[in-house]
Length: 282
Image (cartoon, rainbow, N blue to C red; front, side, top):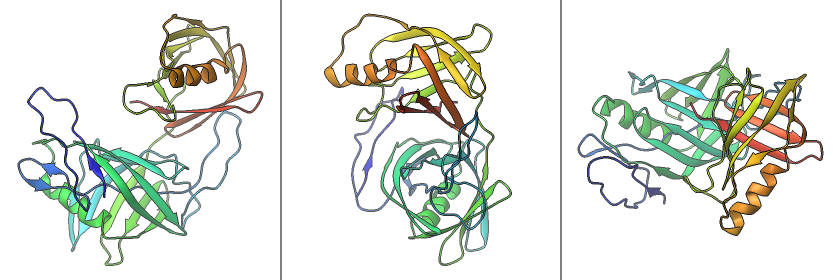
């Protein structure tokens, strides 16, 4: 069972509804079943090490990668994906992405060289520019059960037991500077507690939003480390859980942190071992 939800639109919205399976309305009454994601290994960037995570028949990592969806093939018929269709799975088994029209999130269970989605949540929008055949075919492939994963040469293929496939290609690492890094704030969904940071190379600063307050500080990068200055913040008070998360993030400032970028994921690790993760919002 999973939940569907709607994004805010200018037109009146329908109430989300639940039902067994993975469906999503497209255009008028067309149904779409959710996207699946892949799994694999993490790459180090900026001085960190690399650790194998998840399943892969090749030598390349799969988790932490923003995979662009290239095409889906069902029954011998291939449907090209929109340019913005993508999917990503992190090393905790959480998947997120977009069909090019609707966004989604789901749990991804890994078992050897296979991956399976469950507990999927989707937005429900009608986008005339997204072919319904593509979305329905994609749903058909990704919800038939366990998918075999194969990565090679920066590309990933997901294959059903019946031979239908989804083909994806990896993207380059997001740049540290100029990227809006949305911080993972456990226990908070949506805009509530949606912390983010942006590093400015020329000004040698970092600015953004903590779970409650705005923040600015100096930020100098060298040899895989970032020296963060004393933070300047606004003085708002929020609920206890948000303030606790904010205190944790503020603990990174006033010292040096190691940083690592794995495609769309930034990991900051303080000298005392505290770790904060953020995902590129682009």
